[in-house]
Image 1 (cartoon, rainbow, N blue to C red):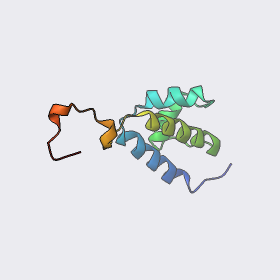
Image 2 (image 1 turned 120 degrees about the horizontal axis):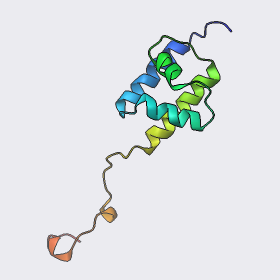
Image 3 (image 1 turned 30 degrees about the horizontal axis):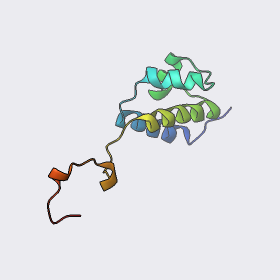
Image 4 (image 1 turned 60 degrees about the vertical axis):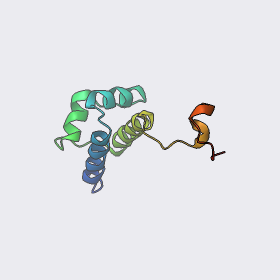
Length: 96
C-alpha cells in the first residue's frame, strides 16, 4: 500500500467538520465502529492527529460516520409563517 496524496486533505477536512459541530473523537469512533469501522478509538485519534495512516475504506467509513453525526445535529433554521403559532390577539389588524 503506497502513499495516498488525498489522505492529508481528507483528514484536515474531517477534523474541521468535527470541530464545526463539536463532535468528539469518542462520538465519532462509536458511530464509525457501529457501521463496521475496524480501527480502534486510539487509532482514530492518532489518524486525526496525523500520526497514523488509515486505508481509504476506513477513512471513508470515518467520513460516513461523521456525516451521519453532523446530519443529526439540530440547526437553527428560519421558520415559515405556517411553522409559527400565533394567537389572533397577537396579529396586527392590517395583516392577513
